[in-house]
Each structure stands twice: as structure tokens, then as C-alpha cells.
Image (cartoon, rainbow, N blue to C red):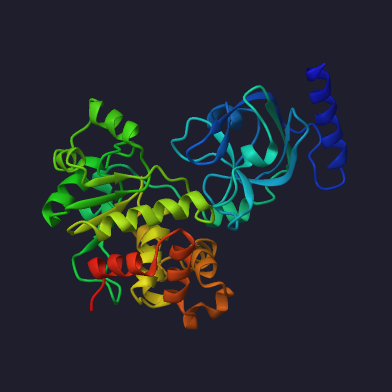
Length: 374
């Protein structure tokens, strides 16, 4: 019976979109198992990117998604990166990921929104071939994990001191992970941490259990990180990417309070050091009085490090990433429109965010005492 209902849903979707650019004899992924990516708030459709493409799907296509419980999602772009507006859904085949995923960019977990369980399945059909290809082509972001392709260890590890106005020099650093070697950068970042004398690490991406798994792995080679972790100088926050959520904000506050109670220099990192790290560093920078332009420059440096994208070399991609990501983050903090950001009171917005996360003004000031210039 469940199988018949699902087939009926597929047929209904095909007819529903026949007048909206749907492709005759469109490729279909039918009755695919799903799993909940709890950490990042995604739905994993249990098929590899290569196998999905073998069915006839391509990046830039428009897809219709139907779950076996009756929940549907229409006209979702299929990309290899997070190229939709904040809060919008997409299907993503992220380079290196084991499966394709249904996700919301910095938004609510679609698993919860769809009300699905591990007993449900998903069916994906092509709605329109290449509808979003121009965006996919403009923002096709892929990078190398080969150190030889980068001009320095700092660029390879996306490692740098935060140098915005208001931040104490050589006090607050950001980077890719010094412990998770998924992209082959951990040992390099670990060496840079040692060279800069990092004393406390705000780890946004991992739980204690995950860190212990990294330590046990054969390729673990982070000898500077390990004693910091063993002496409780690493706070593992295990954060998702939804900075709108109460859980994200609460964990940021927990990390900032921990920094206020420790000696620096400090490192903030996630896996790649650009998304969760980008928001948290922008928050700290805004709080310390950095300008909109300085915060944007620091955020976009990650895209120069990974992809070689600068305002001069690739203005179209630069502007698209800036608009989609850091401008969205800052408008959320400041409560204003994007065009108002250059004159917005970002410090007040950052303080309001941290207050709503549970920090008192005294705790916020104690954090600033650690990282900010007098």
C-alpha cells in the first residue's frame, strides 16, 4: 500500500509540473532511503552523487522532492554548494560528501519541517533541466586538498589572525580544523597553532566523542592540539550551521564565556573555517567595533584562500557570495536591510544577539576585555 501511494504521488507531481517546464520522461530517484544528519540539520538521501548523476540529474537542475509521508518540496535547485538565499531549501551534492542532501541554507532542519522518520523514503524528479545552471556555473566552488596548490601553509589552512579594528593584535585567530583531518589540513593548522602560541581553542564543529575519534585515527598528527584538549583548553561545542537557532546562539555564548575565563591567544575554528567560523568571528568583530567593510574583508578572505576569489579577479562570484552569506549574516545581527549595513550599529546588534543567547552585559564585557583593544 505504501509503495502504491508513493507511485501515485510521483505521478501527481509529474502532472502538477507538466505545465511548469517539467521534462517528459524525466529522470526519477524513486523510493530512496533517508537518514537524518542531526549535526548539520540535513536529510541525507542514501545515494551517492555519482549514482544520482547516472540517473540523469545534473548540477543546476530544478528538482521536485516528495517524501513517503506526503510532504513535498517543489522547484529546489540542485547545486554543489550553498548557493541559495539564507533560509531557502536546495538539494546539494557537496564535493566529498557520501550522499546527496536536502538542506536549508542556514535554516530550519528539513527533517523536522517535513516530519519524516527513518522509515520514510524520498522520491526526487526532474522539474526543469538546467533552470539554475547559470547560478551553478557562476558559483561553482571547488578547491584542492593538495598543499602544493597553495602559496603558504596559512592559505592552505585558512589560518589567520583577526586584524579588524578593535581586536587586539595577535590575540584572536581563525582557521580550518587542527584536529579533524577530513580535508588533510589538520597537521598543518596544528603547526601554525604552535607557532602562534595558541592557548585556548573554541571548536565549533566537534563533540568530545568526535575529537576522541580523531585522536584514535591513524592519520592523527596534531601533537600541539592534543595536550590543549587533554588539559581542557579546548571547548568542543558541536554546533550546527543555523545561526538563527537558539541552540547555536547558546553555544556561541558558552564559548565566549569560556574565552573570557582563559588566557589567550585564542583560536576559533570549525571544519573549513569559513561558515560557522565566519559568523562567530563576524559577531566578535562587530562587538569589538569593526566596520562593515572590515568584517566583509575578513569573511571573504576565506574564499580567496580556498577558491582564489577576490573582488578584482572574479567580481561576479565575489558579489554573489558576499550577498548570499556575510551580508545575510550581518543584516540578521543588525536587523536592517543590506543597503543599510555600512552605517548600521553592528556592535549593538552583536550585543543584542549575545544577550538573547543568555550572556549578561558583565560577561560580554569580560569577553571583550580578553579580545578587544581598550
